[in-house]
Image (cartoon, rainbow, N blue to C red):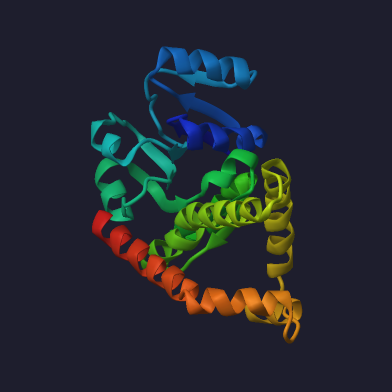
Length: 247
């Protein structure tokens, strides 16, 4: 499979790390950035102009507002776009291709741990998941509406979880735990809980951890009193609403 990656900013370069198994060409207009990419990814061809895309799988990783400015010739085998708020209908207006895929990775792609939402032509599902699984876990969805909803879970929730992590650390520091120790707990904490939640329902997990009259129960009481769950549910609603506006 021959990939043409257009755009190599933070997310594009993160994806490039995972694309080592493929034949990849990168398009990057910035001369300085192109030089950095050549040094970082030995053997990867970096161009400053978009070549004819015929027969290639085009991975779009530019900013959404850049799409109308791209000059693209040829008929691609497929387009895999990570452009936020850009529906497949808009991609079809700009690029001729046999198949179209929309994907929404998250910032954890930097460590090849992304949870990536994927939707599009079912005929290209297997290849799309193969490509996007190189940067973490790829989840196939049934519609662009589902992708807009999942944007909250996969794309935006990492920022919300970062707030949770910061608040937990601040709470521990306030009680007297050194900042470096509090920080050391967080990465392992999230990784461990995440691994359990892969095959355990959140409610079941919560009940396992919560002993009657214990410390966890006391903390949960305070969280419920402050309507934390309601706040997260409303955050999901706000995220979905904005995703629809952008589309």
